[in-house]
Image (cartoon, rainbow, N blue to C red; front, side):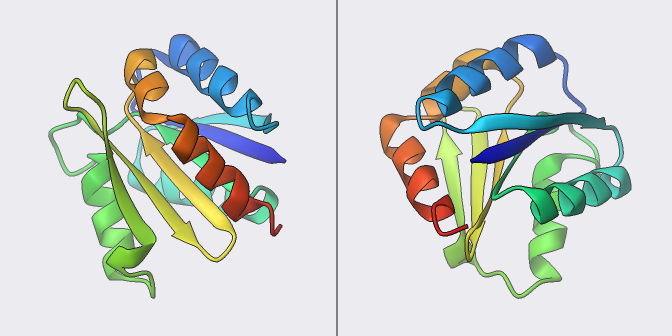
Amino acid sequence: MNYDIIFYISKKTAYSERALTKALSQIRFQKQRVASSTTPTELGKKVTESLRRCPLTVIIGGLSSIDDDNLSTVLSRVLSNSSLTLKNLRKLTAPSGHSGYIIRYQNQILLALPDSPEDIREMLSPALLEFIKEKCAAC
């Protein structure tokens, strides 16, 4: 299965991409495209494009931003204007205290991760990888 990566206000792109690719290769996911975005509007367009092509879209970065472009704030706005509910959302927490999110709707998954390779490795546990594989298998 394929997935896309979208870097959003991210700094450690190469290291984070390597950690993500290594983890997802364990469940036979292959990277299709890599893009970047610096605004919520641009991010929305790239996520929409990705979800049309892939069962899994991964956003890396933007979670530690302190302004209105913070990915948590952007995701909150999206959820409040959609049919998604909190049952579709799960917060991920790394031992460092950094957060990420997994949002599932039908057979699509949007994964939001911090731009830290260490946190990505910690968050993508075998159980979470199996969940992703199972939920995307219906595609």
